Length: 162
Image (cartoon, rainbow, N blue to C red; front, side, top):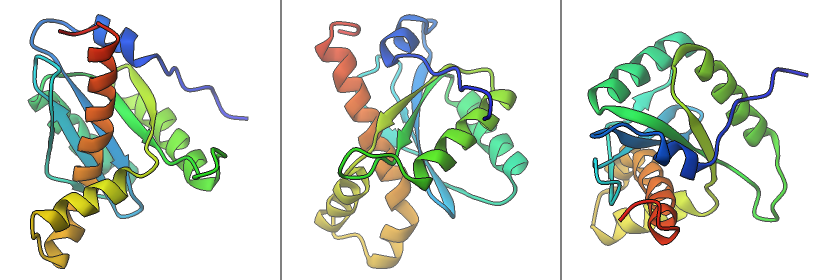
């Protein structure tokens, strides 16, 4: 068995943020990494340009540059749990990515159940009348925004942020 990933609760990440730091969310696809970042007040999520996946080291370097640019102090990683709540191969791949990412980026992270985030993102893009080709280029980052907004809403409802 591999080393356990040092996951922390989203509330702990928010409590540990320095003034002006943001949170980010990742939606890990097989070909792209969707990325969204919060505002400094932790109120809303904004999709960022997605990262096209290649070699792991290049992916993490690109991710690290973007996270530094956005002053990210913690990361929420979408966990692709099956609709029945079980964990399949995609969850294992996501946990492996997080474990490897942790070796390169010194940021706390939490996993977030991402069921239906891609569906919601796709519907939102359709409602905005975004073409099929453009939707394909944006759906993972939009899904990351749905993941992050869910986490931000939980922080708000728990009284962690105002």
